[in-house]
Length: 221
Length: 292
Image (tube, rainbow over all chains, first blue to last red; front, side, top):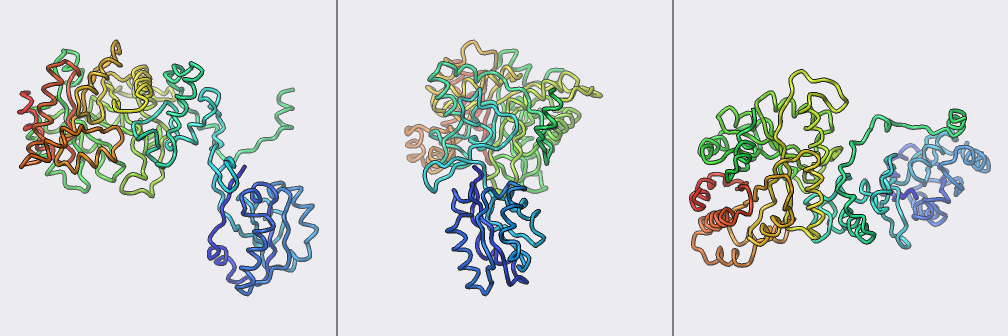
């Protein structure tokens, strides 16, 4: 899941100096799960904006804010309000905001900061689990990601900075490399950690990237 | 030609190095006057690379100054602040200025330093820096392009002997040796048992080990390090000795000197690396106590 967090309201308000009327769009996917873009949050932001004298013409929780075509279809249901509004506020992740903006001919503003790709540990608690590095190493690290869970993204094992098993960077976190070692030890594979890792190749990680399955299939065939 | 550090270790001599930090600012005069005082007592001085993630003059600039006054330098290089282009460039520059030794470190994270707003790099860790140096020593850059003039670094790395589980550190030592490390310096150690255990754990490994010595200045410093510095464990006896002593700094010097002598007598390491942290002028006094 893409975990987002609400921006301070003052920051959102700061975008709206010349704006009197807005449309709010939420997202039923990740942003709803992390309480930044569901029905409740829309109601909350609506009340806060109206208290500041702004008018919310319409709001809608989109099924998947990051789907360009699906958005286009769903936004048609509130097209008149969008046309009348001065601006749109997207209560999704950064991806959702950009996708919504492509579909409305209005200034579009975010209400959230996009934090990380993570896991819901329990309700309301999210942890960063994946840096989307494009070169997954979980197969040799006991399914614990050192790129994400090690505060320095080290590839060759622990640094000397851990104290009592905790990380130097964020001391409440466990040292990922000690966790990896312990887990590999359970299955007798800890010696594999001695292998020197090949240097990573970042030239294929230029961005923005596009993945086109049809092109890939053609290439394969 | 081999570095003096390499020659000393290969000759089986009990080898002494000292750590020196570049100044925070442009005035090198104080640290260089100390360098003059210790240069006949140590084989090489190991220059920190923005130690504790704090902004200072660079390791290379200080290494150049040390080489100029005839004190062999060890360039420290961390992965925190440089990508592979900058790391390779810095190593080539260092070799040009006569630096022959390299200590590869991962580096403290910027959040523990004095400019915590910095973006960390960590493209390379200690092991990958060693890999890079070996490739440069072979006359090519990491992409396989030939070099005009080739460095010949003697390579080292660090190990933290007080670590739970210690196997994690020992395995990383093996990775570092496989990547090219020939010598290790340890995090500051204070009890003989720690070095006995390290000797046992590293038996048969093809490397030299310099025990890290951080002289204590006060019981407060010892307690602070015990509570805050990863890998440091000062025994209670040492803290008690400091508490009872009239002159704490002198007592700290005696404790370090006696410890070094003991390590040497028992043959627990190939030498010592003294990290006096702002009191480098005490290095000769420590060595006097150690009889070195």
